[in-house]
Length: 407
Image (cartoon, rainbow, N blue to C red; front, side):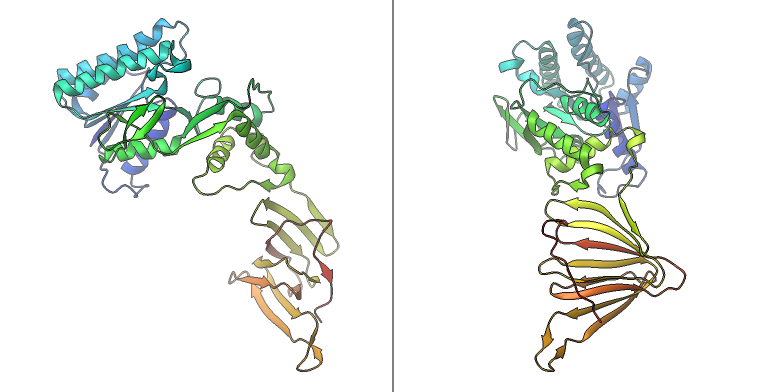
């Protein structure tokens, strides 16, 4: 299959072509039905002759080319409708009836605040021309009315307010929010790319529009990516500031799979300046070694790393409710645990349970509630490094930690 992508250097085009290359080169094997011979990338730096050759040989066309912020509003119709019309003329010239996908916009509805949108009018003209082309030639046409898009490689002050907010907050620049309650419909770039790959496989999602709302219908006139989010500007800004503060707070918000928060966080990170790729952690050092909190979560506890010097014993405490995993990642250790209290069957302390662990075989050891526990570095020369996970964040006002030697 030969795939033509117009607007290949834009936000959507770059994400699409890089994913197509991953499939073509065998790095993405989740789409075994897509066999790619050539990817024809067309953008402003290409010639009309190249476009003609691509139109002659293409088996599928993604028309992503367009203008959304010209200096002159008349360029909307000239560049968007004009290019789309020229593209279809070339396909006609070579009698190429391959499927054609058009990236339109929700503004093409010309409803509400979009009623006077010159951009929307140009996209509506593109849609109508493509539908006419499909009826005339019998070619399959796929019209997608994109809502606001967000994700990696988007441009601040160009693609969407999300890109602008991510860039400014990541770079310590001010943002302006006129109405925090303003709600946006947002589509994440990876969800859009998955839908476009579905379209390549003939599994696109069809819909009709009830005003601005797409209603999924198997034989609908339009196509859409189902996974969109409705979020207010205030919610976006709050999350972005949470992400920005994470190096200081170590607080990671809840990021369930397929959640908006998870996708926004990935987008925010793509705007980080290089100097912020790395940040220092607070190592609490003493003569025994160090203890460093790594990450705290709102609902899954916290992660820490403990370094013990040769021969050092750490711990010697128990918890009521808190429980932990100890995972030795470097070194050789003994972990001891003993149930608190007196064993009624013997009238003595409960027996000590011992685990010898090392980085030669990575294992996780539970620290059980109600058991005092320790960890001993068995090496006489090397530090012991232990990754520790606790089911709750440490609260200095309610530490749930009580000293008692295991032996």
